[in-house]
Structures are given as C-alpha cells and as structure tokens.
Image 1 (cartoon, one colour):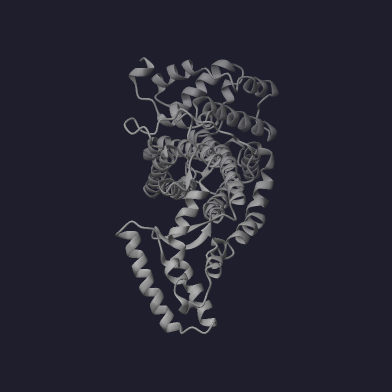
Image 2: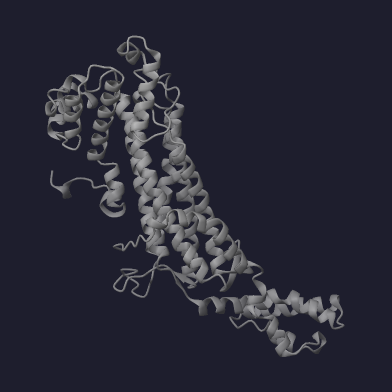
Length: 478
C-alpha cells in the first residue's frame, strides 16, 4: 500500500526522536530476543548443559542479522510470534537451532525484552528531562532578580520574580526526575522463571538441581545488565510494573502541562513568549498573531499521556491467576505510545525553554498598574510612624483605592492612587519618599535568594551528574 494511502502515526512522523523511535522498533525488539536467547544458552552451557562454544558463536554472529521475511512466513504457518522467530533464527544458525529457547517460555523473551526496552526508554527520558531542567535553571538564574506580578486565581497578587516562577516548574520536574531515577535504580528483570513461574522446565533440565536453577536465573539477569530479577512471577512479570512506569510518565506530562499552561497565559499577557521562527505563521487569517503553538502542542500531547496511564491499571487489575493474554494488544499500544509521546513532549519542551523571550517593559507596565494597591500597606505603616491616625488614614486609602479602581476598570484611565496619596498632606510623606517605596524590588521578599539557594542545593547536584549529557539543542519544524 502506498505510504500516503494508510494511517501514519504522528508520534513517529512528526514528534518523537529517532532514538526513542528505534527503542520501540522491530529491529530493537527482535535483536533483544536474540540477545536473551544467547544469554540463556551461554549461561546454561556454563552450568553444564551440552551446548558448545561453536553454537554460541553462531548465535552471536546472527544477533543483528534478523530475517524478518522468514519470520513472517513462519508466523503465517504457526500463528505464534515467538516460535516464528525461533525458527527464523534457526535458519541462520543450523548447528545451534536445537538449543535456541531451551527450557524457556514465550514470556522469557517477550517480558524480559519489554522490561529492557522500558529501561532504555526511561534512561533516554531521564537524559532529556535533565536537559530540560538545565535550560530552566539557566533561565531562572538569568531572571532571578526581575520582579513580576504573582497571580493567585489568575488575579494580580504579591510580587515574585520571573526566575522564582521558573523554579516552581523546575521543582515539579525534579520530583519527576527522582521518581523516574528511583524506578530505574530498582528495576528488576523477569528473569528465567518458566511457563507459570515455577521453573519446572529448568529443574528438569538440571536434573533436579535447585542451586543450578537459581544460578541460571542470577547469571542471565546479570548478563542482561540487571542486579535483580523478580523473586516470584506467574507466566509474566506483574503488570503492576507497567502501571508504575506509565504513572511516572503521566506525572512528567502533568508537570509539563502545568508549565506550558503558565507560558501560554504569560504569552497572552505579552510578558513571556516561546520561540517564534522568522518565517513562522501564527494564523492563516490573522497575520499579526504569534500563537504559542509549541506550548499548545505539548499541552495536547500531555493530555494523551495522562489518559494512557489508565490502561496499565485496567490491565493489571483484570489479569487472571498466572496470566491471561488480554493484556497483549493493549500493552503493545499503551507502553510504546506513552514513551513516544513523552519523548515528543520533552523534545519540544527543550526547544521552547532554550529560547524563551522575556519582555521586561511589559512586565514593568503590569506591575505599575497594580503596585499602587499593594504599596498602600507599607505607606500606611510609615504614615502612622510619623504621627498619623491609622484608622483615619486606612479609610482614606480605602476611598482613594475605590476611586482609582473605578478609573481603571470603568473609564480605562491610568491608576492614579499614588497621585491622590502624594497630594494628601495627612500622609506626611514627600513624593520622593512615596515613590521610593514603590520600587518593585521592595516587594519580592526572598525570591532572588530562594532561586540561588534552590539551584545550588537542589538542582546543580543533579545537573553535575549528567554534565557529559547536556547540550541537546533541538531545532524543530513548526
């Protein structure tokens, strides 16, 4: 079928990286199957099974040489994906074909490969997550002293700084980093467990020698790069693992959705803007528009990842006894698609955070519109220190504030609250004294210090661990 006559997965065609796409490719999957078969045979040979070095070398020589057409032909005959590849591998390894998959069940290659693939995908995700955090770290450091309106309920509130707000995004992502890293550090292989997890076939292979059966599990697990395998399994590893992993991806998506929602709001206020290419078109109708298309794309993909996290919960909760096969089709979709989508989110996120534009004059304009109201408490306190009546002056400020708010909201005029207070002798303060109070830097509390401390204590230690993997510069097509 011509490629334009069938559905194309946008995660592959438009969004995800080549690296993540490869991890979930048939080449990677079936190469890993063969690596597992080699590991099994090699470890069985070490423990005394009649397997020769020549057979092992023949298997190793054909790990990458996957004869897909032969496997496809065999699957039509057998209706079994694992046996079709056992037979296809055997065609390339005639002297070793009799010992491929010896003692194993389909889940040996299927489940162990799924865990290995998820491990590789998590490691790639971790690197991209750190690169994103590093971009935000640099942004937060650059703008740690720039006052900006804080918002609660999307209503103007006490001032913060541009850099401090970015630290809120970083903190969420650090939590995701810790969860993902912890899951990686504690990831277990299914191991060599047999048909229903009892290792009965391997006990028979080793003529009742329990120690050799346990040693085989340990050797294969170590050979495949894992410290531990699950102590007990049914035919499959517990599907709870899929839920745990996709829940972390969902958490990353939640963090990214929150961050890009913030960016979209700030872009509407014209305070911060995502990168906008020289020839980029914001709207087919309204030529002047600069829409936050990349942040919107991230938000869209985040919703997808969050919704996908329900799939493994349903799969795990409805498995029967040692296993049922109603998990397979669902897992083929939900696991790969979730990783491809989160990879896309992080790719776009790295691009966006590498080129965020801050419009300081617009930020100052918005501060100047709201700061007079926020400064009244400080002015009131100072006026009382100079002998003013607190209750009387409080009432004056209330009346002046209502009048100025009406000027702004109903008449579209500028906020003249400070003019009213400056011209009222009962406040006993000069214009210069009042205007000095109005410096926005007086209203940001410890925001600047918090940024510096947060980066030094929480962020830099993680960045330093990944120092040799920093510097992803992703130039996306719009």
